[in-house]
Each structure stands twice: as C-alpha cells, then as structure tokens.
Image 1 (cartoon, one colour):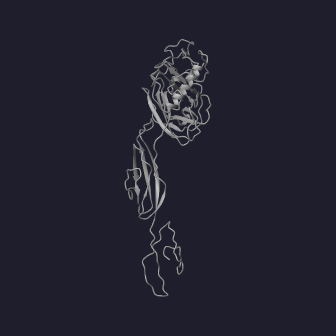
Image 2: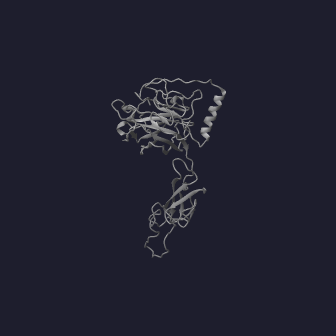
Image 3: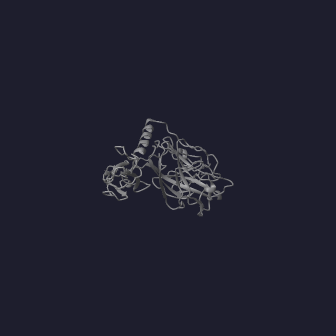
Length: 394
C-alpha cells in the first residue's frame, strides 16, 4: 500500500539471473509439489518464493514488490513483507524509505504465520472524499482448473495491522474463469466465499476457512473486500501509531499468510433407489458399508436397524426414509467431520382383496371389492356383469 498517496505508481530495481535448465527444473518441481502436497491448488501459499530471476529487494520504497512473488500479483498496491527485507532501509530517500521487514515494519509488528513472509493489503479507507471505494486485491492463477460439482475448502490466516484505526469485517474470495483486472478500485463481483465475522484481532493470526461447490470453470482466485463503502461493516479500533500520516492510520489494513485451497473428498450419503413393493414384502435399502462412517436412518418404523449401511425396510405404507451419513475419516480446515443427507421412497402396493364370497338372488346386485387406495389401479376379470371393471368396488 502506498503510504503517502496510495495511488502513485512505483518502480523498482532488482538483479536478474540468466534463465537456465536448472530454473526450469525447479519450476516444474515447485508446481508438482504444490499439487501433490495436500492437494493445495494455490501457488506459493506462504508468499515465500520469489520468481526464479528475482532477488529479495534490500530497500523499502513505495514499490510494493508483489510482482516479484511466484504465482501472485495484485491490483497495483498490495505489499510484500519478508525477513529478508531491511528493518531500516535508507534508499530511496525519504519519504519512501519505509520498512517492509518481518516482524517489524511500518504497519506494526507481526511474525509470519509460517516461514518468513506475508502480504498486506487495504480493504477500506475512511476518507471516502479522497478515496471512494478504494480497494486492494491479491490474485493468482490456480494450479489446476476446478472440477464441476467438487467441494473445495479455502483456508487463510489474517492479522489486522497495529497502526490502523479501523477493522473491516468483510473479506471475500472470488473464483473466476478469467483473470480479473482493475487498479485500486472496487471489483463488482459476488465472491463464492465471504467472511463476515469479527476481523479485529491485531495480536497474532486469525484463521478463516469455508467451503464451496465449484461449477467447473474456475481458474483464477481474487481476495479482497468486494463490498462498497456503504455496505462494508467497519469498526473503529483505534491506533497507537504516532509516526504515520492520518490517511495511513484511518484505514483497514490486513496481513495475509498461508492460503490453501484443497478438494474435500469424503463418502456421501446414498440411500438407494426409489422402489415399489407389495404389502408384507421387504427390500434392502442404502449402499455399501464405509468404515469410519456413522449411519442414522429415520423414521425408524419398518426398518430392521437405523444405524447400519443397508437396513431391511418393510413398511406397511408408502414411506420416505432419510439417511444422514457422517464421514469421520477426513479432517479439513473447514470441518472435522462431513455429514450429507439422502432419501429413498418405498412405495407400498396393498394386496389384492376382492372381498368376501357372498350369495345373492337372481335379479339382485351387490358391491364387491374393498375401499379405493390412492395411487392404485384396478382391473377386474371377467368384465361381464360388472358396472365398472376398473373401479375398486364395482
């Protein structure tokens, strides 16, 4: 974040190394390791890896260095903090010699959640007359396109900077088919993930996690506040900082670290196919047993056991059975156990009942059969002498 004006373009210098076969091999290894290690689909999740041709910048400046990171970019003004960056940079000259060091920096004090680096970005600016709907976003291309219908868990850690006076309890994660453009402005999109809880902690890191179902087109991820100023939930938290300008303090600014996106794979509830049986018949419902899963069937009436994978059902009337299956085999950042629900309907056809044998005198009539049952068709044979051969009680 540009401390003095927030919108000044920056420039930076860094040494570039010659491309080599070694760098290509390292790149392939990095991408492969990110896909296979816990199935995290986020490149450089801890913001510790620089591009293969970059070295750690040794000066501060308002050039934020996000473009040095492997796999990440921003909308022009997010910041990169690292232990390799100097505590007291001396070039370029003031007023742009601020520190982007870890843990001490111009925004306060915070150790990295893991390893040595994190990023920072502003999600709200109080001075709306000068910066209406000012937003900073960080972005990356996922390592693979998401699969349609697959559930994914997004997890990240945030910490409100010590120097700022405001917290903004709105943080969204937007997955898109195309790269989202824009510079320091609100992105008019509805994120799949929204964290609308209290994000006011300045000491240590706050863990955020949620899951969503992909539609199969998502290839890019963008993180930031997608709500405009009028709809952002902001809280005044005060600042102990006396060295920064008012426009720098009257903002909501967050450090972010350890971003993960992992597919959530677990056994799902399968109650079986809808079935029709005759009264007094029985049928097995459900699916194969999965070790480590908890089965709960309801209602209990007509079932041999409500806690097994495939109970025997013999209802006396048409009944819909509901299976709640809880898979305890997998723990993710989003949930310890995963419960899904499915249902199966057993349609019961009553037994054919033509009524009791009777005698009548010639020329008289009588009613035969039993009361009509909804959903049942009737056919009498032979059809002679009957008022209606398709009625329940001709």
